[in-house]
Amino acid sequence: MKRDSCTRCGTCCLKGGPALHHEDKGLLLAGNVGYQHLVTIRKGEPAYDPVLDTVRPVERELVKVRGKGKEWSCCFFEEKSSSCTIYEHRPLECRLLKCWDTSALEGVVGRNTIVRADIINSHDPIIELIEMHERECPYQEVEELISNLSRETDKSKTLARLNELVRKDLAIRFYAISELGLREEFELFIFGRPLFKVLSSRGIPVHSA
Image (cartoon, rainbow, N blue to C red; front, side, top):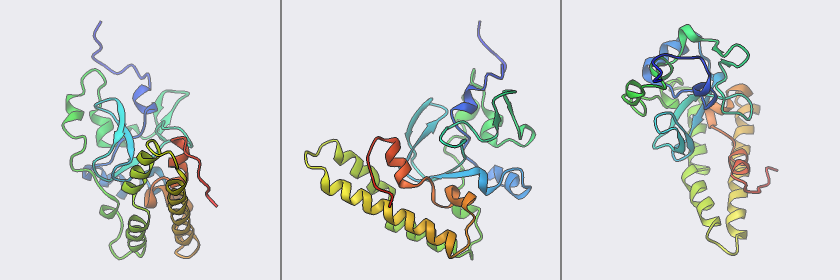
């Protein structure tokens, strides 16, 4: 029998939080969603695509509702009651998502989405540090190096470069927290996932110290 309503199975929420759109800025302004609830997915980084129901590299930077710890499960999803803790104030993609009919969601995925600069004060010094981070630790290079590892016999140079990027990534994060006073809970939004965690999730051994 074809489904035509939500059974609150929680499958959608367990696969990851939604990307935010400009229509969702009001949720941030009202305090329904905070920076501590967000994670930035950098251009080229793999992330869950709710329309294709698969993980694939994103075509542009996305700001998403983060998961819980090491899990993808949306941080606002309450598993015991299979409910959303911000249901009345849920983001656009959540309001449009119907697993039995994804046409409405397909119309907005990847369109009019926000990037970090859209929701950070343009005079905030963290903007310059984000730009430095993108220059010093370009995610596109990370993916190219990962690809090289699968083809190389001698992987030492590639692993050395990945370790160098990991150290730069951590150094910039440490500076932001220790010198600029960035709250640690905002780190995933400001810089995205730490490179050593990205690499370890792909089975690549790196040294974070």
